[in-house]
View (cartoon, rainbow, N blue to C red):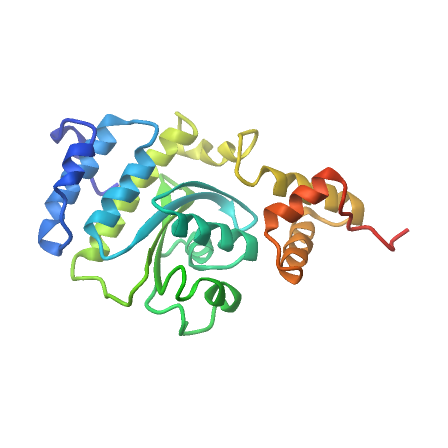
Length: 258
């Protein structure tokens, strides 16, 4: 972890954030705010980290998603509705910078979603470009040897990051990772992914529905989730709405298989 001196700042980070200004010369201000947030240890520390980072960096929003892989992820916090919807789309479509960052263990910087260099995420890029985001920066969250999720920034303009902005973003991700571990487990980083089991989760119906579809079609859960995503995309519906119909029993995926 890159920040050690959490005990140098008193308070809960709220007042310090008010004086935080954007710019590479203000890095110590961000350090102080993040130190205060980490020292306070409140349950909303991950959100406060996102808010502090957005204040200091040339981005319009940020979010944290907990995940073990592309098919098992849950949104933890978001600074605004756009950030929340971007996270939802990455799960619904099964692609995006956040998923790649988590899978690879490397940060993913996209300068212009309208012109992805390698066209990695064509459906996701079309869904978010312009109205939700023009650029993104996704950073994997790691605590010890555990990779527990991603911190995703988005911007509505093509403004480039300054000399020290990338370092500030990585600094924020370091603090966010340990804040997330505290929220998820109140224990060790190695147990972090256990938070996905048995909790009150945003995608609970989706996870339930994939199990039902797997039984109906006699296919693995991963294949069932792919079918669920494909149905939602083909019918221009949200993944959660389709999953709700499956759980209620009004939509089945074994028609014609009998």
